Amino acid sequence: MKSDCEFTIEWLSTGRRPGNKRGKKTIGVLGLNDYDRLLLPRVKIGDTIFNILDSLGKWVDKIKIKVDSSVEDQNELVCKIRNLLKSCQPDA
Image (tube, rainbow, N blue to C red):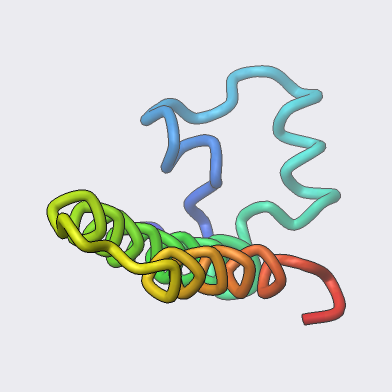
């Protein structure tokens, strides 16, 4: 049985292993089989972003339902989106 590090990103995303020599060489040279270094951090980041966007979606629904939605509510939503975008910058 293969270890987690032997799974490739391509295999995880498509269910197929790369079939040509160039693909296999690229995976080896770039170290794309490194589960802990490449795949796991991206999965964690994606999960965090999903949760943030989910909460923002609920916030938008709450603002839409409120008849007396205030400017403060809308500004808080803008601030949350701005913070998410800032956290995606390389210097964050």
